[in-house]
Length: 121
Ligand SMILES: [Zn+2]
Image 1: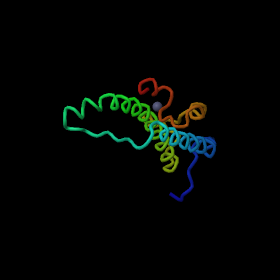
Image 2 (image 1 turned 120 degrees about the vertical axis):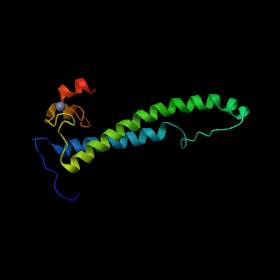
Image 3 (image 1 turned 180 degrees about the vertical axis):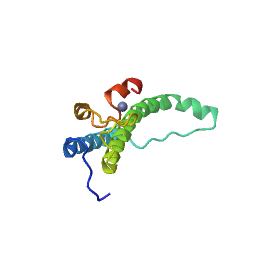
Image 4 (image 1 turned 60 degrees about the vertical axis):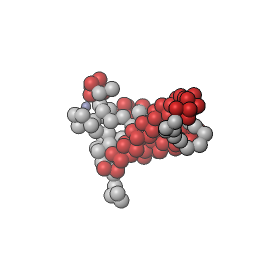
């Protein structure tokens, strides 16, 4: 860190980075409202306890899958920010080609070029 981020293309990294940071903050907010209180699934060893908790577990599973999607996007964003730090942002993870600026503008967290995205959706 501390060193300037190289810009291999004429991309406005500052704007993309800000976009990622905004989305990141939004997702962190969403993940807080995904559930009331911290995720807390207890494995109750008794049969009675398990029966009582069935419905609750189903609710939590739903909240968790939504939460997982948010976490997944957060990871993509974190990864993109990390790649900006390392100077590898904007390059395809698969073929190492430059990712089209328009593609990055529509999804700044994207990690593959258009042709590779066909193989790695
Ligand atoms: Zn590629």
